[in-house]
Amino acid sequence: MHEAVAVNPWAMLAYLVSGICFILALRGLSSPASSRNGNRFGMAGMALAIVTTLITHAPGSSQRVCPIAADCWTVFTIDWISAIEIAGAIIIGGGIGIVTARRIAMTAMPQLVAAFHSLVGLAAVLVAIAAYLNPQAFGILQPDGIDIFQSSRIEMGLGIAIGAITFSGSVIAFLKLNGTMGGKPIMLPGRHIINLATIAAILILVGLFHLDTPGLFWAIAILSFVIGFLLIIPIGGADMPVVVSMLNSYSGWAAAAMGFTLHNSAMIITGALVGSSGAILSYIMCRAMNRSFISVIAGGFGGDSGGAAGGEAKEQRPWKRGSAEDAAFLMSQAEQVIIVPGYGMAVAQAQHALREMGDVLKAQGVTIKYAIHPVAGRMPGHMNVLLAEANVPYDEVFELEDINSEFAQTDVAFIIGANDVVNPAAKTDKSSPIYGMPVFDVNKAKTVLFIKRSMGGVGYAGVDNDVFYQDNTMMLLADAKKMVEEIVKAMAH
Image (cartoon, rainbow, N blue to C red):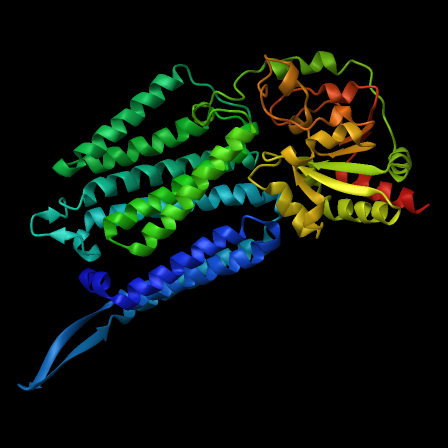
């Protein structure tokens, strides 16, 4: 069966077309304006790959029938039980995906992404287990065992290792994003030594896997599950966007490794694209945070509590409280307002009210711009997704490096639900866990309007913010959505 797939030119052509669709999908997802088309290309490519695989690997058996010696033909008999099982799995899985996509709130999108990554990793592990226990069914069995000469065992070992790390790491990321587990780093004594020793042991076992020593396969799986937990537990909440993109990369490499094991071109292409794009995104985000990728993975960022500990004393400093009417008047008199959204906006579901406020101000001749930090929220592009959902024009949305210099000439910086990404401690306090991370210079604006629920809370990194206590800052303490709606009403009077 497997040899027939390898030489079938139509199947290879179909996999090539699906791969092109995946490349176009990634290209489309690089911009909010083309993201819908990107999703469509991705869906089309995956559908084509699935259908091709089902056709070329149809469950059943074939036999040569020769009623007359000179007249023979091949008869294919479908295994209807297996076909029904496959169809049932597709219907159940697809149904769960559709229901989840329709019901999930945007605030829960980051943990949903983490959960999906865990399922991809688990799928790679289950496929590896099935191939290990029954290699003949996957077409990788030679007379002397699994295809050693084409390194199928090494690839299988890598596939289960990366898949297991993706699964367990994504579970921890899900628990942290969901609030089930605290967002603060959990520092184990000697964690670096433990992690390095465990990773070294996994690599050695993978290298020895070709010896077919009993127990190596399960040892690789168990150690990989363990290191997945150990790698993510020490990482603080401020690094969650990098963690999500990193786990996305891992899930792709797990699929690619299993693709090599099973000689499946579609899995190799898809996994390589996901793995490489996730790795590039992780690198870009680490660079945007002025962090070493290795230090993030090692749990070194967010590990100190000094910033959080200093927050209580700073809360006693004087600060100014404003009202919706005050904010409405200040913004109505401004020439330019820069809005900086954060995770608090997502929690309050305030993006639609925010867009309405922007429309009212634009009608009054005020220039409105949105400033998006690369790590705002709990996953890459979280704020972009929310603003796109609210139909905020794409040409009003700017990245940090494109707009940061404008705050000094801006009348009002409107901060809604953000904290760490506008905290000047990242530039001034070397003891702060966010030191070195590029932040918006909102403190340079003529007026800062800062929406947060209370003065008692700090950002996800646990660091107090000096902007709260500046003379040009007015604190708007309330639910973000409620406050914005009150501002819009005040502007109407």
